[in-house]
Image 1: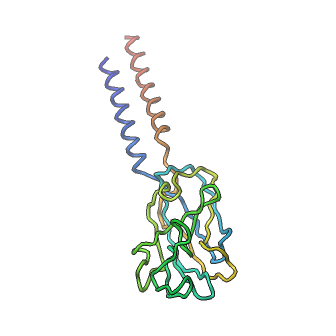
Image 2: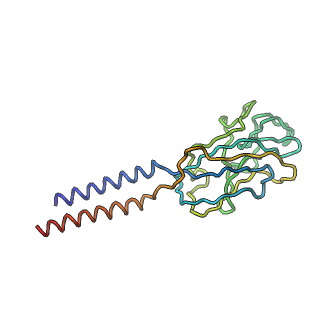
Length: 217
């Protein structure tokens, strides 16, 4: 009986450890190097997700450049923050932005699809240039969870598309260059129930061998 209790307890400890390790070692969605032009308003470059990702898995990416939405020079970085003053939408200073719809600014870089919706990747924060007289044109996301952007994980085979937030594209110009940071993890970790199943199966096999030996003795 002592062996059985010890083996079962060990199995529980291994399961708890696996769950902890699984949640700590979140995978990161790989973003291919992509150019998103200012004219990519109604459709844009896309890529396919090649693994299952949990909502707690992450996305990291670097974006450089600016886009111009109007002939009057409404030029923004990927957060939709103006990199120079403009007379569009009234007189707007450098470091300002205009909301197009809840959570989405004019000129911002979007990612999504018609099912998930298109989400703004970079918020209008001081780190991304809000209120600055010289907003950055190189922005980075680091280990942001997928559920904070899409509200869920992503399924293998999901097609995601980049777009620019605007209502037309006839006089747009400029571009954003999108890429994944170097040396980020790219493979989704096994889901907890897979690890648990493997550990329980292994524990049961060990216990069965112990019982068979006891019977023979």
